[in-house]
Image (cartoon, rainbow, N blue to C red):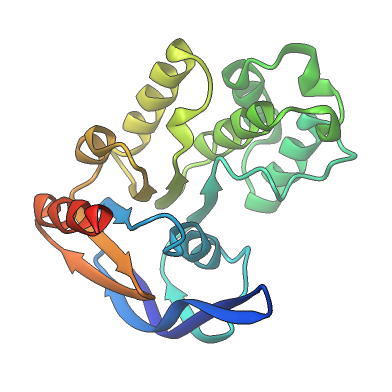
Length: 218
């Protein structure tokens, strides 16, 4: 269960305050994988980061039960001076999982070769995304937060990413941000549409997609 209570988030843009989450109160259903849809700039990635706890709200709060991942594919929390392996080791200790098992899973999955033992500051954005995705998938969360992550890498790596994510979804749920409606239908049970800082929930995923597509045409 994830509940928003009077949640507000804004940014200062060119000297004016832009509200992206506007006094939002809502309860997301338990046990469903949700598509989070909305136009570019609607605040989808911002909302994911607030759910994960990597970004503070201006006001209000988020109440959750169970374990929640950081936004899968988001490498911003890695320490730039540490190697990929050292970062994974640190994360394993924080989440209380087997350190060597997670390091080996990520090393094999991320496919970044010798860079795994080099400082993250030397990584391309794609390498950081592979490292973040592999680390997320190596830890069993109740809810995964996913922001377009399966777009990372070549066609073969994308297939591998989708396969491991599909395996995780057998026992977990997700909040998925994606502009690929085929991917949304593949992984999600229901939909959320974020517009003007408010969320509409749809138990029927096709209704959520239809509204999203109408808003995209405006």
